[in-house]
Each structure stands twice: as C-alpha cells, then as structure tokens.
Image (cartoon, rainbow, N blue to C red; front, side, top):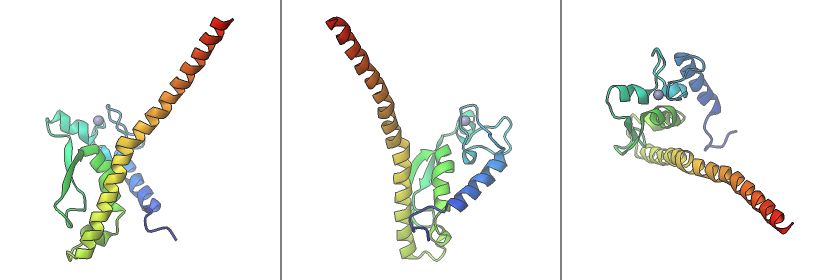
Length: 159
Ligand SMILES: [Zn+2]
C-alpha cells in the first residue's frame, strides 16, 4: 500500500499522456517550453500559455488558489505555465472531495490548506533551491579543474 503522502503515479502518468496527446508528441513552443500542460492545444505553430499571453500583452502571472477555490480565497501569483504544468496538476492528485469540498466541511478545508502548502513548498523547492544546488555542483567541477591547474603551475615553478 502506498504511503498517504505519495502522489498517485498512475493518475499522474495518465494525465500527462492525455495532455501530451492533446498537443502532439514532442510538441514544443519556440521559447523551449515542452510541458504538455503548458502548451495551448490546437495552436499552430505550437505556443505555450506564457508566450500566448505575451503576444496579447496580457500578464504572464496567474493567481493560484493555494488550497483550491472551494476551500480558501488565498492566492499566490505564479507564472501561468507553472500554474498549468505544476500546481494545478498537483491539486488533481488530491482526493477529489478535498479539492472540491462541495459541503464546505471545515476539516476538508484544513486538509486542503495543508496539501496546498505542501504543493507550494515542493514547487518553490524545485524552482528555487534545486537549481542553486545544481549550480553549486557544476561550479565544483570548475573549482576542481582550477585547483588541478594551480597544482600544475606550482609543480612547474618548483622544477
Ligand atoms: Zn513559449
């Protein structure tokens, strides 16, 4: 039995496959965006939501309902493509009754707030912290090469 904290990988795969079929295999915007959920279906050439908005002079930011519209009015601004490709799909993995909460039950509102906070934390971790860790790791290769070069200079001077 999967832990309660795990996302449903089968549902996520199915959703991604449907989105991919909707826009076409290996579809990509001129800006490089290739996440199917961020691409506008039926657009030719294929264009992403961000570029579409930019061509129309509209904001590229969306107001993401952190706990779902039914559970809280709290929103945070996020880029439209991340909203469509990351944060909304994350909410589709929630239990349907938590996201929709048609009876406006307080305990489900609280559960939605926790799930929304976790999703936003995951989003920020992947968007902000992970690239910094990867940058530091890439820079380590340069540092290693620099140290090696320095040792070779020192050896040459000693010879
Ligand atoms: Zn684009």
